[in-house]
Length: 416
View 1 (tube, helix red, strand yellow):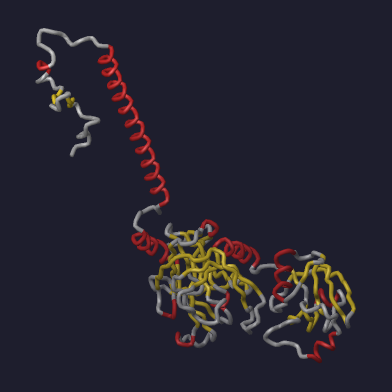
View 2: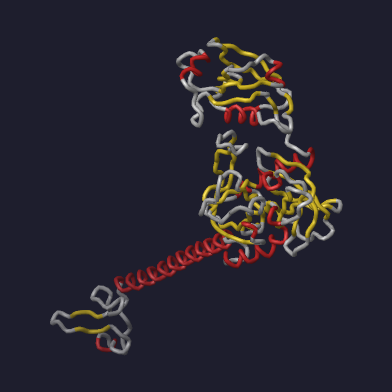
């Protein structure tokens, strides 16, 4: 049945006796003789005009709706193309990223004994060439990759071995910068903006995992800014928090210091295994590139990251790993309501000058609660600068006291 095959829209007219006549050009003579003109009936004129007007309106409406649909579809196509990474197919993009970035990712060999060059006794890691300047090439890696090294060797993707020196390192952020001769270095990585990273975005991890040599893995970003606890001394006590990118791209031992790259070929993170005691399948972490470069700039300029220094060795009052027994708590003579704070075990430098002593229990900095060594360190590093004054509230033999400490620059070795 056609669209108009019904009595309402049909041109057939029923007569009183039930017979049907069709108003077609061929049969008009049955109704009106050839010699006569069509009757100039007002009803007929109105019908014709209405039909023509309806047809015109229908055409205009159809054109308008089609135009809107085409415009909308065009906008959708344009937006779709804008959202797609340049190059289209994400799998092809991984191939392109690998070709672009792999030459800028190097293996790092940490020789603990300068006289012993046996690779079996060396520590292996990864690094990223991020700059060439004045004939030198500069490499970002992790602090723990170069820890305890007597000699460092950088091996490029094409097998060239170059001796490297430490420009600067920082244990807190687990980052280090090396320099080496740049005459044979052709590739330099493009550092990206990690703040633009999105959950679900495809990323590629490039490094030297498990001593297997140049290796490439891919995955997606599950967190752009995951906060994880870190034990700086690897003693099981968390005394820092690291903000990291979390991904399911495989990052194993040896991947440390390598590149986490987006599909535009920009390094948006430096892979790290420092925050995990052992490899965890399906979860990898990388330090965001924006935080990396902030530290790297300090390391290149000063050889270190200068931070304020209080001068106390401490333990948490409610330390779950080594809780105080009843006698130890009794000796502190704390009021019953004081359950959180930091017990001073040793004082040096600024803290000693300000009069802090063994078994003082710090509860506030500048009237802000301090419940743990982690909070103590974060307050110092995030809110204070070298030379600032710090008001410390503490309990001594059950008595509430305050003192003012002038913060100094943190020494190289002490962790306090």
